[in-house]
Image (cartoon, rainbow, N blue to C red; front, side, top):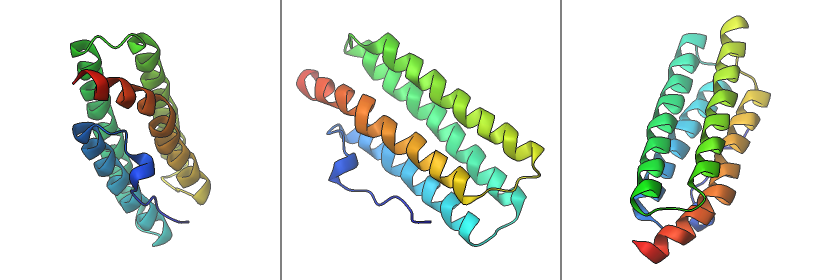
Length: 133
């Protein structure tokens, strides 16, 4: 399992949002290493909780920017945020029911969960914000 390396590819061109994304990538990498190291399920659960909580905060941050700058695709973007949170909450529930055993499959799901949103929906937001901020 490899971690996510922050690069310009993941940058949406808005520093305050990129800073959030770097933090999320760092937490994801902490979780990835913890799975590789076979850390205790309680620790894995705590790191996953941190990732979810920081993501929820980050989504609120993006949504505030969308409101301030009157982003026309805000409702669709917010809907995607809700779907992403639901997906990760389902994963958390699956882990709780399975005794906290996190696998490479879970890490792959989380990696896609994080990077696909940045590389698609957030890139469109970044292009818009770069023109209006």
